[in-house]
Length: 246
Ligand code: ADP
Ligand code: MG
Image 1 (cartoon, protein in one colour):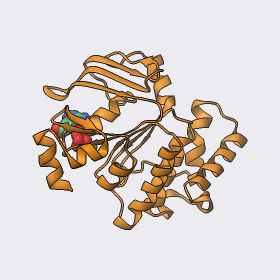
Image 2 (image 1 turned 90 degrees about the horizontal axis):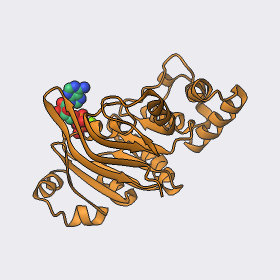
Image 3 (image 1 turned 60 degrees about the horizontal axis):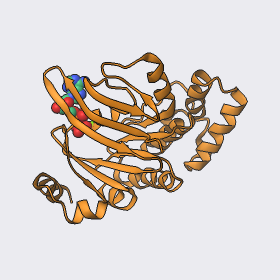
Image 4 (image 1 turned 30 degrees about the vertical axis):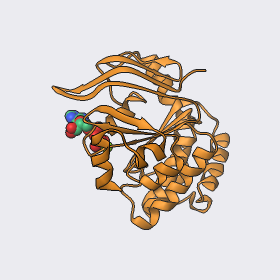
């Protein structure tokens, strides 16, 4: 079976700063991996590497069978990976001048040459799926944060990704909107989507993750099933972190 993500001895620097240290990580089809750790530990950089948004300096990275060599890899592999990996950010990053529906239609039409009628039908289906079918013709600024983030998820799904990356998708939301976004993610996980999720929502991690990874100063220092990591952390760094956040 092909791993969806395979990182081996991966190192990433920003100038002299060694941000990811010898990362060994594989993600299997259908797996939900939640990445936790303190601010600045390298969580965003790690998942941004998984779709080639960040280059890495040494080691190995293969995404859904496409090897992406260090220092930018080759453009063909990068293009393939971008097509197959959806990403949702803390800031929703919707196009403000496009309606909700057009936001979702854009990438399939541009990148995959999907006919407009097909893209339109897909967008409507996805908007219903994330519970905002009635918002299709509004502009992002007319929606709440929770609704905008659900549009962002629908937009990523429109490309039929093999892997979804989430970087703190609920951190910019008012508390009352966090649940509606986590619900959509929970459904996606149930349907078998492969996901890498950076989040501080420990309840979600415990419930939805197949595996929790704790990263400290650019190193994976502990990983395991959520109940094991949360209830019985082995590494003292993990223990200290969890005692601060739980
Ligand atoms: P996290 O998501 O866990 O908060 P990041 O992956 O964003 O951590 O950052 C890891 C480290 O890399 C931090 O020290 C951060 O300041 C640094 N860093 C992140 N992005 C850049 C960048 N584009 N240029 C230089 N340093 C960066
Ligand atoms: Mg981050």
